[in-house]
View 1: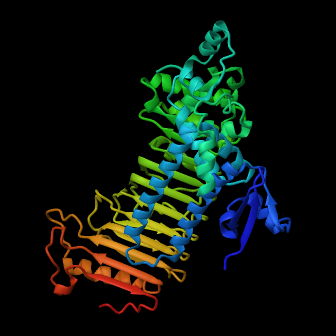
View 2: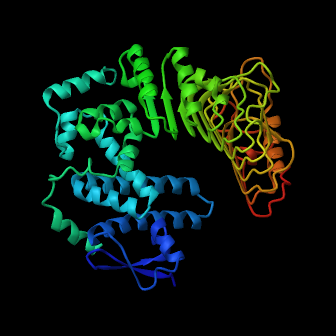
View 3: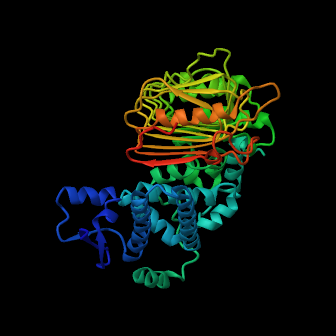
Length: 167
Length: 327
């Protein structure tokens, strides 16, 4: 029987999770090792975000377990299929986040707090891809960034960085 | 997941965020995000708002790509500005894709990367490759579509990946990787080798993967392995002769898929010789826990082997305990 832990979200919802799944979080792993994790583990993450985090962790865990159990026959083909499955899953996951950026940023902060490097990199890359190649006005609109430059200031700063604005 | 569905319903209203959550991220996350894109676009965030003016100067990685610029002149000017204005921080990763960059700029990049203790490098630049040994802090290198004429001499290198790279040298005895005493992973994809003997000696190599050398200039190339810690060996592509110096006591998994070499007019290689060689490889690698050797004759220039009809697609597979007694 797998060892289970109870995680408590900031809005007091309890999530029962396998130790292996949750140990991907360095923060929680440390809490468990320090013996601080008796009973419920309280986390500064909302239930909605935590559910999303666990969705990611379970998918990752699933992937590693399958690889361990693999025998060699037909491994290559199987690996390819699995890679395709993971890609598809990740695409769906990122499409959802792009559609609801509040969830995206909640998740970004949670992965930083929980110390989940793989999820953090994945999300940062997602945001980087959303920003790269877009016009400033488009980026501001997408992320609700207020342009606090006066037109003169904006002109000056563009001129100062002219070398980066050449085609 | 029920909780998730409920959660999503609740906040579905907010497709438009009302606060600027990107700018309010901790600075370290913003630097991380800016490090993951073409540096040109990272700099361009300076005009988003006052807060963003200097964020780009903190990037931990640089990504230079000539394709982001119409003219080489603009590309080089851009690089010079970046190297001057970036904060004096260590460099995690440098990606440099160039078409024809002047050597003075490439020198500057190398010197900069050296002083900033670069850890990872990805490039297609032949010039940069020739001075790669100056970058002693590198632990990971990826080279694509380039040429290598000098041996690597990087003590801290852990992973090296060469894709579509020409490996050339006048000296037949040159040992390209022996100076990398800590190299554990070596991947060669579609590399061209113009030597009769291609030696791979690396005392700590664990993972070796060689795939499809499309244009092997010498049809009768001999691959010599001196890799005492080898655990995983993957080979797929045209026939090469494999031999080894020393043994492979730690060998775990071997996958070899060979097809016949291109035979040029005037070159003599008998199929019999090739097949016997492949079987010799099986003997050399016999202590692997899993050994898989496939020899494909159907697509090559010879239709079928002459030794025995069974060798038409000789496929010897063995799990644990295979004793290399195939011949």
